[in-house]
Image (cartoon, rainbow, N blue to C red):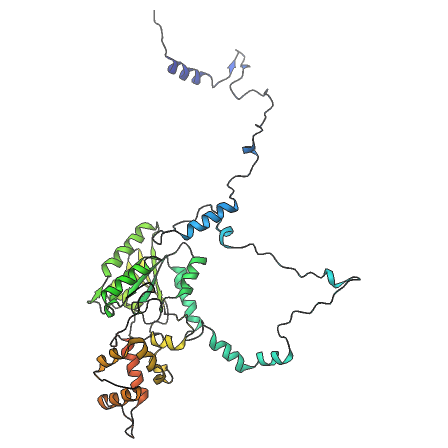
Length: 410
């Protein structure tokens, strides 16, 4: 006699197999319906709980305020790779409603006459505003036009839009003076997913202690590296920058990664790309404005570098000349800038550079004219050539100078 003994688990499994079909008689009629096959069912009811009738994925204003504050205190080394379901538009963008003029008080027994909103207060003001001389003055004071064309700014925004990582190249002698705040503001508002880092170029022109101070200061905002690119064979920081670029390549899950180099003119963007490529692929020169168009450079098969023309987002013409943003041959009255050079570098730096002790500015011009042969036909010092010579030496690092971080005590 054969007996089958099943445990509870086995019996439950067999009942599951046999309970999925309907029971039929010999004529094929359904005697007992299978589960979920019967048409007779009780009325379905929803549990009267608040969770079934409220909104999902909602956020309060207090939570938005807390999230907004936490975003500001994030570490500069955090990278935003993708945007989730958080309503970022509610965080930064205010609801813009179309404002309609109220004319309810213009009609009826209690009407009030309204003054029209005109662009000009008087006819004389309209004539003065439309004067071509006045328009030219406004155009001259525009910070985006001063020393730069709108085409250059269009090239800059093309590079930013095409780049996954933006490298802001700074002059180590004056990092704050060569930092473009408009680029950073654009990245914060329009391209938060793009990562920004600093490269402190020309560190061979300043002391190592000053370089260390600037690295500590700038690293509080964004990652910062020290670099100098004198030539393809004589450079510093190439290995560190290559390691950072490789880390970005593994961090971003993309087939190709584009690195854009932006910054002030004559800060060495093209020279950095040449040292990374170990080949003169970008046209570079120790004068501003050598790069006129953006260009793609293949560093690896899946990593590209983008060279960008330099931009000058400043309104101070004198400081733009001292920082090397404007070509010396285009400077009018360069002798007016020599007092600023002496104030920036110090009198001792100019004396040590040329080996000429001087008491006044005229004394400096006379001694340099006799030493370097910069005289006119009448035997007078050629002040224009001497002034441009001093400015050239300042830009190329022959006359040393550097600035300290704001919190530095030394």
